[in-house]
Length: 62
Length: 257
Image 1 (tube, rainbow over the protein chains, first blue to last red):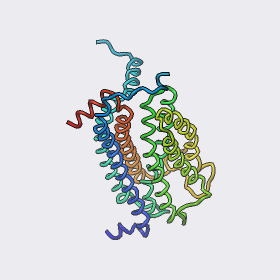
Image 2: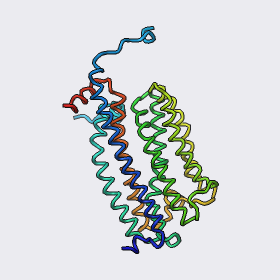
Image 3: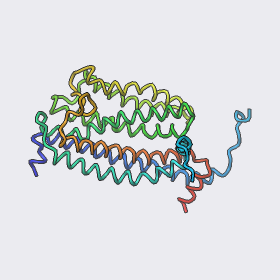
Image 4: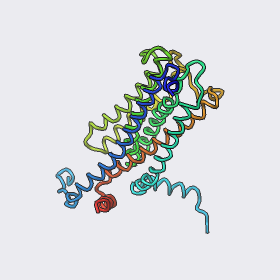
């Protein structure tokens, strides 16, 4: 087992590369799910305001 | 029953892919399958690459970094092409959903570009004796790719108006795509530190089967992973862009109930 972890002396390089990759991929998965959950949560908060239409501005009329 | 001609079927598919509610539901249905398949393949590929594949005769065990480095680098370039094509479709046909796809690809592509640079640097230390070499063309153009992704995202942030951000950032995405073939051919045009291509080269892959199979598994796993997160991000992006439409408001009300 320790021979496997040592990777012929290249262990620190191999495992740090795989470790960084794992961390980045897990973070990205979390961020993608949070991205969608946030969008949904913001919709639910904003919903009452959405019912009343904003008054058109001068620019839109002209 | 009369068969529907291929051309009208293609037209229907094209219109459906431009329809936000359809794509939102499609992404929602696809993502759990993509997520499960990518996690299984990542585990299989990592085990095969780390344990079963034999060490390289020249580089020893450090070559095992190839199984995460090459898929990351491939996604960094493939992601950029996807972003540029989506942005071009959005620009030419004024399809907002296509701009949305480009927006979602950008952070994922940037992360995989960063991973390609980091894992490459770690691999470089035992192989070249250095983490980073400013004179190496492959390294420089890959770094430029990262700056193009970041530039795309920062440029968008500088506009309050989403339509304007879509149009201007699409130009940057499309112009920057010339960098992708340069990254690919840089190891042939300028031979410095980075080794030549392993897979896409004249005469076929320069790698034995017992090393190649886990690499192909990892390429598939990383692509599915990218597709999974793209679906998730696209769902969020569609909700933000379509928040004033009736179908999104109904969806929010359903989710709250």
